[in-house]
Image 1: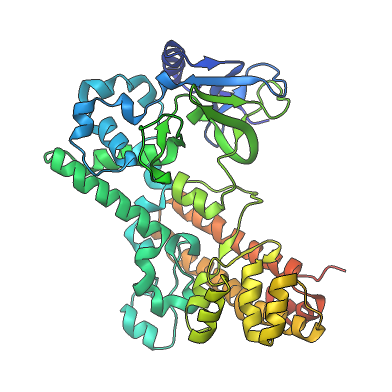
Image 2 (image 1 turned 90 degrees about the vertical axis):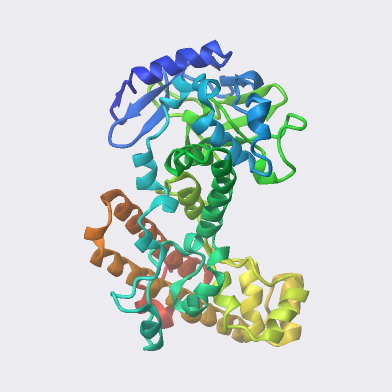
Length: 439
């Protein structure tokens, strides 16, 4: 078990403040976990099914907790932006939450873990210092060091398309949302600093909860149903953890199993990939059963003829392609089979999920292995090499996170190769992937 220590007096004051707001805390408390982070552990033996924390609606920071006059100044803003503006510029009203705010990460913490705040050089392809267009035309391919699900593309197939689609990538959508919120806030507070707003925007982004139990509190947009929930926001995420439920009375966290004294208690934020967790919360898991990689860019370029794309769209099989440790998804299988099988056989595969012709199956596996997995595996290896070259230009934590994530991507692709292709295909490209074929 890791060494545990007191999280500090500010956390002790916050726990007292939370109890004063009606938060019930039962047998758990915040601690500092050596070598890692803040977390919540069992202060006594916890039985399965125990209520550990209950937060009443009155203790939540919701839109209706913000004074009406303040809200009225922010017409058109998202709930995310409004909560951030209130925390940054709400004056005496916002100071009520000072004991809670004292427990939040610092801006330096966010800069180290949130891709949105990382150095700008990571937002563009690495091209060894040469101008990007001549480098691309020379036949060499620059490398994106951000994971593909964050940057919006893999380098291998879509770098020439990147400049067209970059505004659709998750990272750029997140940035656009921040800028749009700040545009409204800066008109309300023209003499205030964007850095203060950005800090509070990141707090809301990483610590908010979904909540739609109060009529009229939030917009109709799913992503705008956000609240901040004291104490429950302490709990760290795992692929499995305690249940967090809400109703019109508030939030309740219930233990999922027995916990011994000193054992960390975790919750599950949902079935998210590591790239989603990194972009939205600033961390990745060592083991994540929900992890996957996007493949849409591979099929959005020159790999599929326009008529094939139209045919797949008519069948509702164009887009949303991905791979996991089990192999490529069913939608990807259909897209690949549009290239390797007769149309009638492909449609039969859609209907039954089966292929009777071993030759078609082998062609499909070979296509997946050589034209998707192998290409992306090589890209992961190349990206790791590029990261090593620029290591001295990056803060240590950012470098470690990127290296860990690309190593995970390599392992994920290798697992997809082993688990998702037949042994005949594996024998042909075994050496390229550096894996031993299981018997």
